[in-house]
Length: 247
View (cartoon, helix red, strand yellow):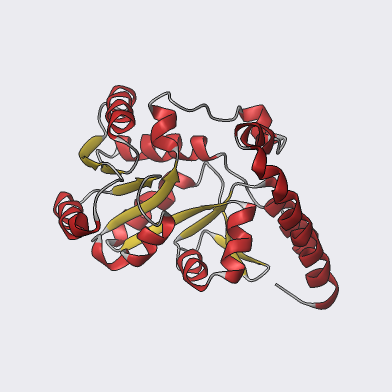
């Protein structure tokens, strides 16, 4: 896509996309008729992409890699002087689903547990009445059922496949089945279904803009405090690349 600037941050691709550009980019991807995935990249994902070959390939082959961590935006500015757009995940999904609804497109929901999935589906139908939900499946399916589920997804032919927590392998499941989905867009949406089911709270917009969403996540899981060490490692990497390398 010519309109999207791709930036290299510590050898990981980052797409410079504004929330206003998103609908047209989505329409273009769908019109091209191929299978494309989009990645919402946190700082921890960026570091994981540097050391995990499978995940790095998944990120590098994505149609869009949208930064959601303020640290990534700051790192790119430090390395290149460029300012890239950072998009709040919930805002990204609302914009995406709105854009698809406006064109009468469809979505398939995969992941989470049955109670959350059903409630999320009901709320999605209420919020986006013209968005066609062409299928859903919980994430706790057995390995022997995988081919049946992939066949169901291909037959449904969704414009967008949303895959959430509960699916074995998380994003790796998407990466490993890239060639089995058929035309459309695939996105790993983490705990989005739980948010739509009103079973989990999302960070507020002001909290996100200040880069303080990690506080709420740390309160929910105190072990996240140890992420200070990979964060410091990231800062050291930035300084090393600034002084001795490019990219």
